[in-house]
Amino acid sequence: MSINPICRTVTAPALALLIALILSACGSGPEVSTTPPPDSSPATGLSIGGNISGLGAGKSLLINLNGSNALTLSANGSFTLPNTFISGSSYSVTVGAQPVEQTCMITNGSGTVTSSNVTNLTLSCITNTYTLSGTVTGLGTGKSVVINTNGGNALTLSANGSFTLPNTFISGSSYTVTVGAQPVDQTCMVTNDSGTVTSINVTNLTLSCTNNNIAPTITGTPNTTVLANTLYSFTPIASDANGDTLAYTITNKPTWATFNTATGELRGTPTTANSYANIVISVSDGTASVSLAAFTITVQPSTGNAVLSWTKPTQNTDGSTLTDLTGYVIYYGTSTSTLTSSMTVSGGDTLTATIDGLPTGITYYFAIASVSASGGEGNKSNPASKTI
Image 1 (cartoon, rainbow, N blue to C red):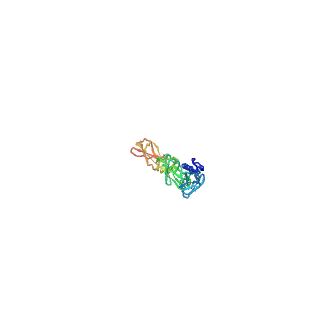
Image 2 (image 1 turned 180 degrees about the vertical axis):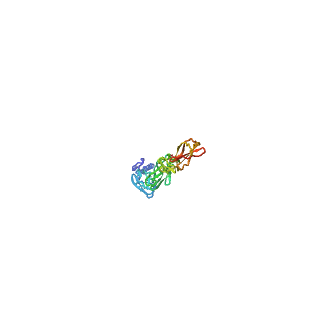
Image 3 (image 1 turned 90 degrees about the vertical axis):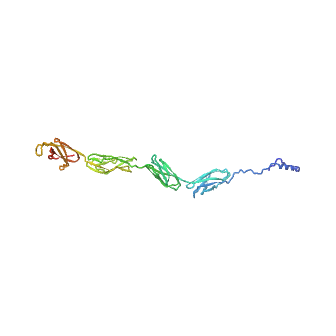
């Protein structure tokens, strides 16, 4: 205790005399302080803790403190690390091992301990999710395709390249990817379209698009008649919108004709008159086939002519002089006994005639008789023949 400087020690003889003054002077001095100075030593035994949420049932995670294993947590709620700290210590809390199929994040995980416990660590856990992705090829310019996952979650793709479906999956989820809407005039197919998500993203979906086949077209009007011994030729016109190679076929082809499977030409020369029915020419692009309407080719006989000449008769059948000759009748046919066709020639001085329209390849026989003014006919001449 300090003494006020006004107060001094006195000798015994003066004690009685001065006691009143000393008491008076000392009683009126300043008050003496008795509070101890503040303690400047650091606080000890401080803890670090917080709260964990979202941890799945039956799962656990390890948290580290300043790089060393510190605590395994197996339930949601509050936690406190086993270590203690003095004020001024720095700390860093991290996840040392994540729970299976979950990811946990720490907030307020680092700092410096002050004079009180740290209680604001927040550990939030979420279940891991995975995506489905792949590539699309062959999609036509300006076209789009819609794909669905498990019957919904539609995604519209409008360009070739990579894509990722909008929905996510947890490990163990099954998935099926299908085409919900095809592009115009195209068909798209999904490969690796179904499966079960494991612990990684699915990246092997393949969507391949191809142009739909458009059937070829074929046009043309074939001739339906031809003369025997005359060339017949018909080639249809065909096209294919996909640019496919075309091949032609024919049914009921005439025996006298050939057929070109690359061009569709029917070509040949018939030699005899006949009729060939139900001829069908078709064209195929390898997928679809179209045909012309069935048609019939009728082979008509080709014709030629016979030029006849004779000598003017001078006598009647009775030997008298022929004076009233007015013309002739020419009889003809395919045998000497069937001269059933005839042609009249006017004028007794006419000595030649031509018969047209006779089918070729056939032998005809001809005989001529004179005609008098009275209309009587003389005897027929001996037959003459010609193969037309």
